Length: 181
Figure 1 (cartoon, helix red, strand yellow):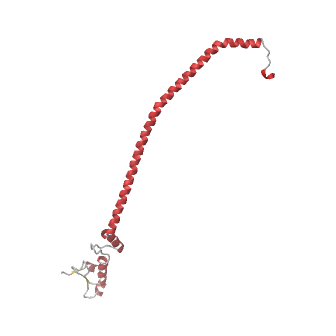
Figure 2 (tube, one colour):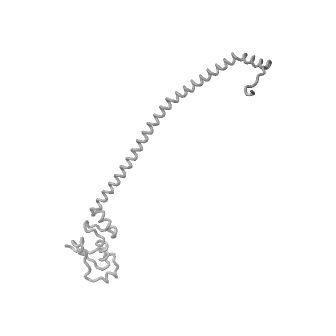
């Protein structure tokens, strides 16, 4: 195994390098155990440990910036119960989509039924509006016929009525009223 020195040693100040033990520190934790890293100072080792070993997934060796993201990663990636719940979420979305589709299909059917009934009503109105007009015309013609008959009768009996009125005025016949008895 070859030994390598960590790059973070270059980031440290001269004072920290002088205060570090001469033997230095070695990281032998996985995944560094295959090729251990050497650190000249305690602060460089702590920075390395915080970055590569604190929030690390043991199953897939992924490094995450904080514990919260590590917990999310473990739950979402490696938890079989979460996979089942995720499947149920998809089922819920599928059911929601089916409901939306059913609603739109029902709306289309309602529109088709409404259009059909509107067409039937229009046909019915056209059929019977014409018959109402015919009935109105027939009634008007009957009224005109009756009026013309009344006028003819009035013309024919006009002279007789006038003579009867003149006779009643000129030669009155006094009669006792039926209620006067």
